[in-house]
Image (cartoon, rainbow, N blue to C red; front, side, top):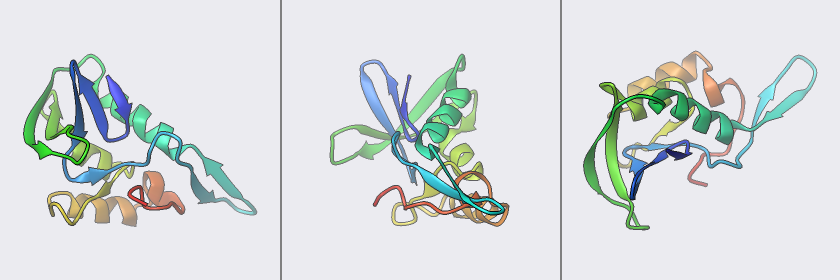
Amino acid sequence: MVIDGDTIEIQPHKIRLFGIDAPKLEQTCREQRLIHTHVYPCGRQASAFLKSLVDGKLVICVEEGRDRYDRFVATCFADGRDLGMALVAAGWAVANKRITGRYNSAQETAKAAKKGMWAGAFVEPEK
């Protein structure tokens, strides 16, 4: 079950994806269109993207530790695909560079291609 763009639940545990930060469910982002700014629910889009990655697939997580809320923090894979990498590469999460450099290259590529949140402006999810 997907909780938000960077948290899943595998009963009975909530698992925060390691090394990334996605917008919270209610967060909005802005995309500049020709003559106006379009505000859209990027938190919901990030969550929907994660849901599309895990639905109907075998999800395996490798624990990396615990966060301040005592949730498991893990690198998770759906049918062998790193969920954190997929979210960052699609522009629906940012790499948490303080924790790991694992996703930095994927973020730079997504940013250059203006994918996901990089198509416009957004407040860093941690803020």
